[in-house]
Image (cartoon, helix red, strand yellow):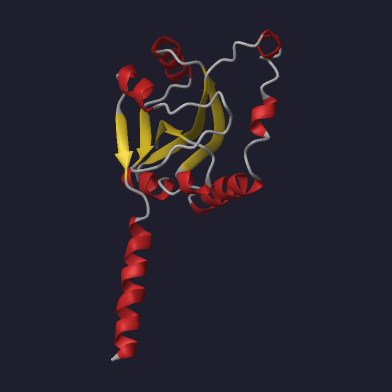
Length: 163
């Protein structure tokens, strides 16, 4: 089974996990290594730059519920999801971003359709323009298709009960 490395820009809200079932369905014959990446500009503070190797403090911004959601998805799709992990990208230039993509062997960037990207820190930024300028293959994924079917079914059952 071939492995596909996917980057998903994330603000580590549970809603950013909603596109993963759609990706699994779209690539049924591939193992997926999924990186949920939050984008941060490098600080211009000397003390922050000196402590740059101490990047673990950003990981404290990720909720336990988000980690639990990742674990649940890995358990739901054990044959397809090889890895599902949060990560941070530090920088704001296309060259640095391309280096990140190449280093992590990213084959696809998956953007959640209509997702409102929230900032976790004052240094967070929306990566849309950076990703567009990188020239990498970007796929916009609509999430929640199965949920919408369930809602329609529930409404139809409700109408039948009213009659």
